[in-house]
Image 1 (tube, rainbow, N blue to C red):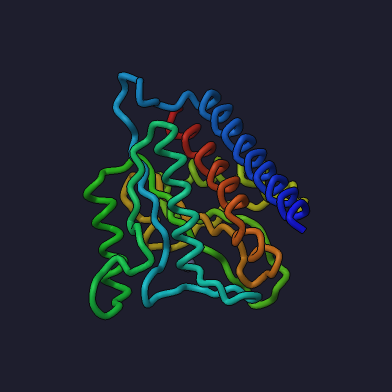
Image 2: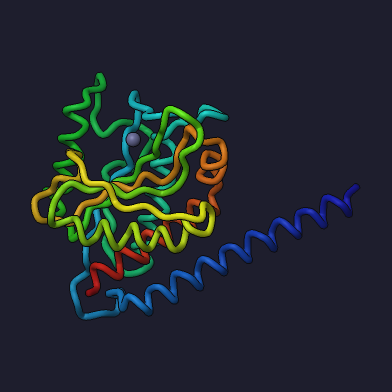
Length: 234
Ligand SMILES: [Zn+2]
């Protein structure tokens, strides 16, 4: 019994090490391609605001299989994305760092959105990335979808969606998507390129399982950072 457990533990540790190594290699390769500003560079660091959607009394949508809250998955994805940007030499600022709302007291959607806007205005970022989870009436829809609102954001949205199609959507779904333009408050930040990434459909049980896995979130976050860094370093 002990030997079996020990062997299992060793296999689990090996698997974690392999995934971590693969992601690190990917980040390094991506950073080289993108010529990111590093901590040793004389150039000023670029700032990225990462916005974990919802939070506190506003859970967003919930998983069809386990009832997992979108707000929790958004936060976990946003925090790992911030870590990757920081490791690549960017200044990463989050609109929220904890599970609670961006505003204290009774939940107020207008005040919540205003608090997020204030973080953007205060930090004067080079890009804004809002992290959300998607939902559809039926369970069939899957994949990673990029949304944007302004002309200043179109190029980033297109490049990010194209990269996520190549690395995430086509390998798992056999198809990609176009970025969708619409009237989204968090994506309207003047001339600052701003996108929303809907990371998975919580109305689909496979997407729900994938995005609930820390290794998958790390891989998705690495690919988001790769495309955004490449865009900002042009
Ligand atoms: Zn949402």
